[in-house]
Image (cartoon, rainbow, N blue to C red):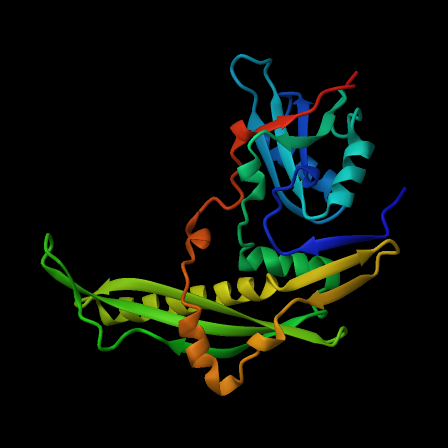
Length: 282
């Protein structure tokens, strides 16, 4: 029985029912060729978060396995049923199963979806003209009266450069919009070359904008209906709506830790925590 609607959230998919484990991949092709083949096959079923191809362990037969992540549980399920036992791009049939995770804390972990991934997902469902964004404010919130930090080992003094940004997402065909806040900071030495300092300022501004966009997308929910139509909802607390003239205070209040963005491998699964159910496999 087909589900009537599927919910698409802008976060890194870690759920069991959105992750496929593909194995019995022959060592006939290179990792790049296998990646391209899997991406082409599974992207036909829906938007993919990632495709990872790994070589089998030394104790196993030569070959590869892959982990394919969907944003949609329904699309992952359909892909699993359709592709399991089919050769697709090789003579020997592939084995495809939904993953299970032994570590429940790993499954419950929430990680922000980076700005580029958010835009990619929005474009997939709405098209390039289905949404837009605007910078409401981009503000230097560095503490000008802050005491300079001195590294006793190097004898150098550093300044803290910090920017805050508010971005608004607009979905014109749905009559909804929402905002997100992002903060980025960087230390630089007082004797830094002016050109290098200018470039670093641009990098901090760019990162603040990316984080604000990612934060805004966390409030967005796509409802994909059975007929393929998409409804867009923006989840926000009406009590937290702030007038534009008060956005500077909002940025500083929301100066939270962004460690989730610093985890360079946001799409790096802990493979040791993944397992799969091979019951009923022929």
